[in-house]
Image 1 (cartoon, rainbow, N blue to C red):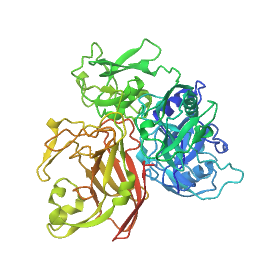
Image 2 (spheres, helix red, strand yellow):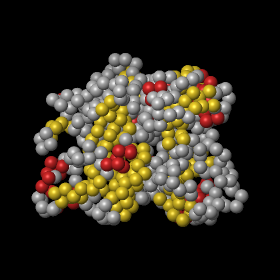
Image 3 (cartoon, rainbow, N blue to C red):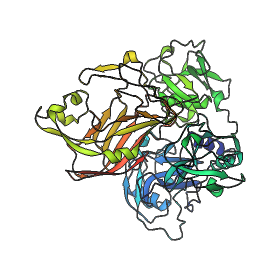
Image 4 (tube, rainbow, N blue to C red):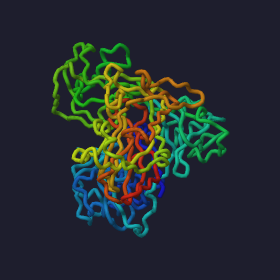
Length: 587
């Protein structure tokens, strides 16, 4: 089983979707399956990981935009209809709770109800296109019988055009290409505007404005797939250009190539503004409302406003990334703008503009009314980007039966399963799945705790400060995505354990030192320290998924949250555990 090659969802893809109606090109996956009656204008694909070609998360493209289906009221009958849309004869099963990983973008259908005989999913009942109260943790998947409909083109696998990472603005970033199921970078030797233009057009943008060298969009990690790429500028894919397959000594990630693409003007930045801040990069968020009359500016309720929502605002204004999403802005003068015109804003963080996020439509509901508790942002041109070393998790995983008398401090920090509370302390033991985690910062800014040292929490038992209450989530899931065991890790010591050759360590926890992870460095949590585990005492033998998520509550802004998660397949026989196929991404 290898990961399906799909066009990676990103803010850039959202921009392309906005431009589809104006005739601007959008990324075109390889030839889609034949349209079924009633499905004109729709395309279907299976995505996610791990999976076989006949199973996966169901994704539908409508009006140029890919989205998912919520599992609410989903049945085998709906799976039958969708499998036929995908060119298979029937379904043998379906999955809930994002078994194949949560998707991104829109959730196109919710409460889908089919009899199973429909010729098209458009004939099934639902809440309507794009009307959903679900999150992507509820994405539905199907398992189709591996038998094709006669005459149906076998093309639900979408081959991937390349992706951009690390860019602060749409249409820019470090160039990464997919080879044999693995993403890697491109060496900047002989990198020029013609090659950059091929990348931009492959992603559906115009020509390239700039070909970037010297890892100006941050250094990648892992493989470097291409070097000395030479293009005429007219090739449909970077792989069609002449290139050299490199060896380890040929190039380093300090030479990763990047691009800035030419983009059409969309005007999204005119619908929003910041006021009261000390610079143009910060302030209270004001949005434009009103129909045909004169524009009217208003404020946004600060309830549940966070990093993801702030990221969208900064992107919409062309100000890069969000450093902070603020729920109180009383210290910024709002002038004569006092009316709250938007509430209940919930973003995935990938949207191009705030009006693409879910929010209350007409009724404004604010738990804390008044201008004191309205939304604000602080933006930055750079951000950190954390990545877990997945191979190390696989290499270091093992089981330990640890005596209860050695676990008092861990129990105090809630690092054990709830059943430990009723254990016969100090007798007996807990069964722990232990592993090391090595977390790299590949971004363009240091990763720093959101809270300053004055608000760190001292834990007497372990004798250290916590700079973030929840830095990492550890979960054991069933193949269907049901959680059967969980753990968490507080950031008691964020520091530079090791760095790349040309980078100096900046953060050290000793003597109440500053905590963080420098760009180009990594922090190592060894398998033999407290709480670096999942308590699996109550887990029955079987096949499971180990999931690790860094910065799970988005407390600290990053340039890319899609690489913060890692999954492994696990087989547990009640005595031993086999951990394999560890990979980045929750898809």
